[in-house]
Length: 259
Image 1: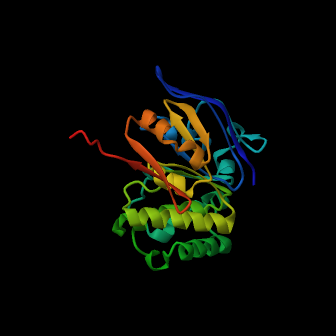
Image 2 (image 1 turned 45 degrees about the horizontal axis):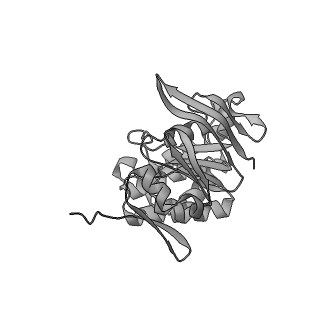
Image 3 (image 1 turned 120 degrees about the vertical axis):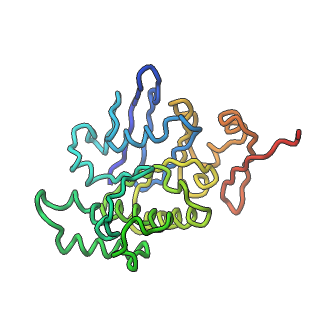
């Protein structure tokens, strides 16, 4: 399993600077959350790390520049889940999860016994066995999110990149999704990099947090180091308290008492 290093990455959209000279390193087996206000560049950084967004600077997996890899080669090393994945119409759950096996299937070939074994394994891990013949459009939000995770886990890569995987999920499904990622990460020794809006969840599940502001790294370190109430209050323009509950970091916005 290789480390991932991002060096001096810049991304511009016209005259707007989205990422400004960003450098970060992800160690094998880490869970790193990228947080920051809206427009900070979180999703852009993740897409650059996935090799899907052009930029200046470089991204390396081990000693290999991501730019020197074909999409198929990249897909053997990392799997990327966007915030709003496209859903093929009328596709079954099992057919959708099998898309994750495409990088491993020969061109013009079809899935083999190993691919079916991995499909069944992933469906079982995510409690989707009873859903495999249902169509995607018949699923609830939580069920569909499990299908997205199943697809990238079926890709069987050492690193997964997740863009806001708990967006639009209720509190219970957020916790279930992150617990599931946590369990499978431990089983497979995965490297996990995700963007998140919820600072409390980022603080509870991450080994390390990268805090972006206006396209730059404002802070980087353990949740306890990064989730500082004064820093967060200034950055988000909000009244914020940070508490430690059972060794977990919890970030709480507080209402004004002026009204």
